[in-house]
Length: 52
Figure 1 (tube, rainbow, N blue to C red):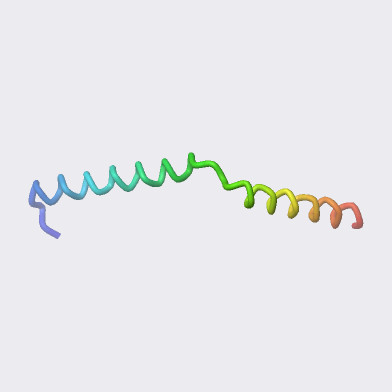
Figure 2 (figure 1 turned 180 degrees about the horizontal axis):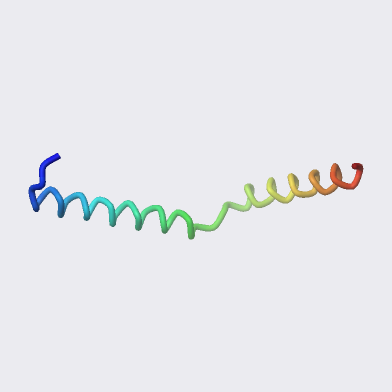
């Protein structure tokens, strides 16, 4: 890779933008359907844990 200052600046800008996108995705709320599925899985886990 080149040590060209403009390509370094472009790389840093891409890094910052990607971090922003992933941060926003982490903070996004789960859809209700996924929450319901997670609750069902937790309930199944607790039932199977009680039987042991």
